[in-house]
Image 1: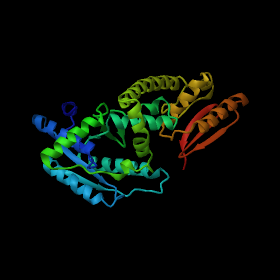
Image 2: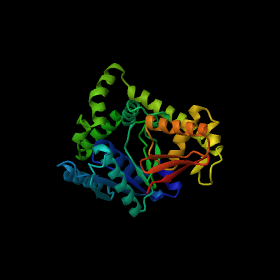
Image 3: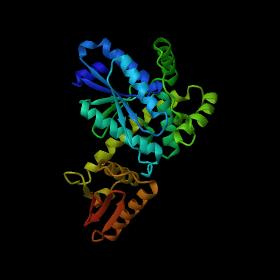
Image 4: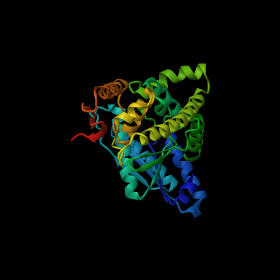
Length: 325
């Protein structure tokens, strides 16, 4: 992994560390690999996001500083304000604040890649959550091994690693070094959706279907393959709709020639390409109904469909998307 980053010209790598055993062991392993590969000339940074949501937050930051000192890796403590009234929920707001802080700090340090400690159990939980929320193939692909957000590349090298193996490594490291991981109470607080899955649903699955995490994670990989194929089909369909150079508008008549399933799919793809929030099935169904009805009524009729920060319009047979002022 590290050799691949260096070969690609990336000499500075960040590791996001909460202080929990998962991220701490990722930092320990990454530091060990970097030391073994000293000729590669890699520089590591540990990034700890201080959300300030728990009384123990300062102590957690101190624990991460101690880990960085033990590993001889510089630590950046990133203090954020979580917008609990943003409408995204406390989990979503904390996640948004965390990624924004990580990206800002990494850019300041000249870091192009940040390692995240999501593992096989996290992936399985994510698939279950996406399934319960009605996600399609793209959503069921869950977390990608590599993803880009706000211009920063995030790598998840442990998506195929069971958490039990990480816990064993954490216990061994604690015995050898005396350093102990922190325990975030939100991980078992059933008010939080993921924690509820972890504490209520996972134990039942563990008892009835041991090793279910690996099976569900495999479904995520299969869904990712399917999603990639569907994206290629949608991109090809969009290219066949006589789009403008920036693809912000296309021909209603050409779109109408597609099958109903492909009409819906290419619309989702088009909205995603232009950064629009993905609509619910009901909202998308309304847009589909209006576009199909518009075609039947004639191109002299117009449409204006507002959705979050974007507006979809149809004028003289051209469907377009624009930012709402």
